[in-house]
Amino acid sequence: LLEKALSPREKDGSYCYTAIEADIILGEHVDALSGKVISERVAIMAHPPSKTSDLSFKEFINSCCENSRVHVKLDFKELEAAQECMPLIEELVPRFLKNGRTIFLNADILPGPGIDNHNDTSSYIDAAVFMELCRK
Figure 1 (tube, rainbow, N blue to C red):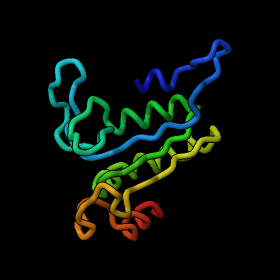
Figure 2: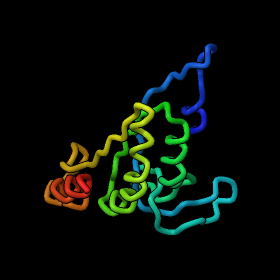
Figure 3: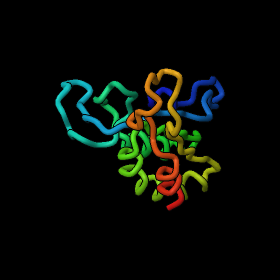
Figure 4: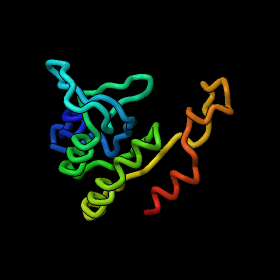
């Protein structure tokens, strides 16, 4: 699906999509064909409660960077996933900006409507900690 989203869609070779939003958690990166675990605890492209994906964050962000035609909104579902991803993001930001593209960083810093216990801090990321991480 990512390859399709990053490919020209119009007859004139133009692109339908200008931005891609993706959720990131820590989990198992698995082979798409065999289902065999490639890595046990890495940043992957998935939305909770899923904890497995055949697309790692590194594969995703590198594909988006190589395409250089899309803005990317990264929606971190766990602080640990954001911490793991920041060094690669920092490395790739200049390439995105050079091509007039942006990486947006997002995290669930407030409990959403699906959260029954708003005192359960495991359902969202501490805003101050996330902002400090993003400033680095």
